[in-house]
Amino acid sequence: MPEPTPSNRSSILLEASCLSKHYGSQRVLEAVDLKLAKGDRVALMGPSGAGKSTLLNCLGGIETIDAGKLFFEGQPLHAMNEDAIAQLRRQRIGTVFQFFHLLPTLNAAENIALPLRLNGIGPAECRERVQSLLREVGLGERANSFPETLSGGEMQRVAIARALAAEPALLLADEPTGNLDSKTGESILDLIERLCDRQRTALVMVTHAESSTRICHRVIHLHDGRVMNKMTAL
Image 1 (tube, helix red, strand yellow):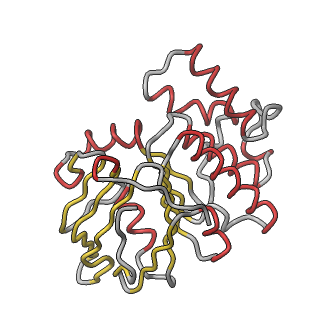
Image 2 (cartoon, rainbow, N blue to C red; image 1 turned 180 degrees about the vertical axis):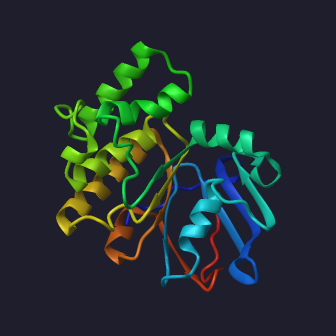
């Protein structure tokens, strides 16, 4: 695993305090405390149903929390309205899914450009960033290819480029190699590590594979919605 880098209070990117989430009477997350430093990379592990994906969605503002506090870059996500959270997510948080979630009617370049266009980036700069990212993820010749013509590994590379196009402070990855063969999965992990290092983007990654945690500074285990080893700032 990479060596953790020292940090102090001013470098904290995300902080959750006593975070809880329920679906009706079912407890999914209970009293989760979490601190994430800028550039930190953390793996979330645990059995199915432990609450890993729910925690990831709460950290990214996709799902609301029922109790506790959640701060991102000092802003109280727990007190923000939907529009404010949506804007923050577009500008500061990228997400990569196990099943890619590319738009089938857009080619690779258009998929990557989408978050840039939503953030008001002009056509020239947008085109330059997209071309640069395509080269960086090894798909410089596939700009005009649609998702149905790409392999699983290629689709995930496009998804990673799209998630990092706006140079977010945080990347959330939900089983990013879970739908790929082992060799392709390893190359995807290397790509995530390299791009996060270059942009100093923090990473929270859900994974079932112990081998995938090699790119992370810390591994956090969840069980029945609780953190088994408490997260502290690096």
